[in-house]
Amino acid sequence: MLKDRFRKFLPVVVDLETGGFNSKKNAILEIAIQLIDFKNGKLILGDSLRYHIQPSSDLLVEQESLDFLKLDLNNPLRMPVNEGFALKELFKFINKQKKKYECTRAILVGHNAFFDHSFLFEACKRNNIKKSPFHPFSLIDTVSLGVLATRQTVLARICKELNIPYDDNEAHSATYDANVTAQVFCKIFNQYDA
Image 1 (cartoon, helix red, strand yellow):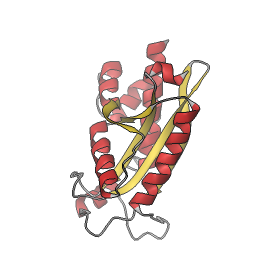
Image 2 (image 1 turned 180 degrees about the vertical axis):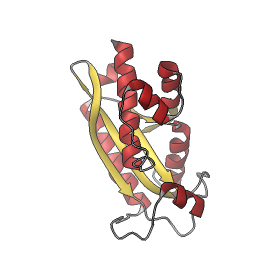
Image 3 (image 1 turned 135 degrees about the horizontal axis):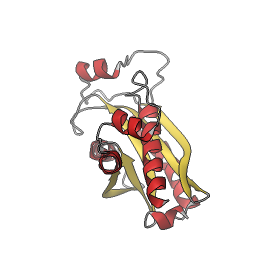
Image 4 (image 1 turned 90 degrees about the vertical axis):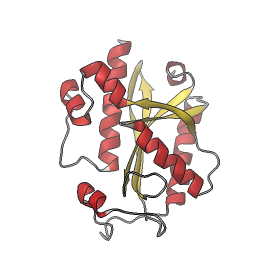
């Protein structure tokens, strides 16, 4: 069972795109999670869920971040939702998976996981969400896993070493980055367990 591999923690890959680097002052613009499943003794990608977030007027969105992400906040196809709504829906989705695998908590998996973790927890505070499914301080970082497995720290380079396709044009979208990070996570763990 998945719970036995991670000490009753459910690994959930999280990727956020933000309006800057300060979790207290900058807005979350996109959030995506990629669930991990367990089949025939191997970790595999499960379901995913993502939201575009409507930045709150009291949070900063730096133009430099928008330029880097190639993100137009006024694009009508974006269809953003309120941050609190997105978090509650994502947490319901995670809790269902947690129950399926009899896990006590989720553990955030990310590339530079501390960044995503800090923004996620600040968003919970802002939205008065007291029960996050995520462990408050334990994380699994694919930077550390990547450097161990491939001697690389950059996601694109880790993917190259692991023969995982990586498209620079798709990068820096929360959905794409969560998916690729999950592939890295699964491949490294499956190779190690084998």
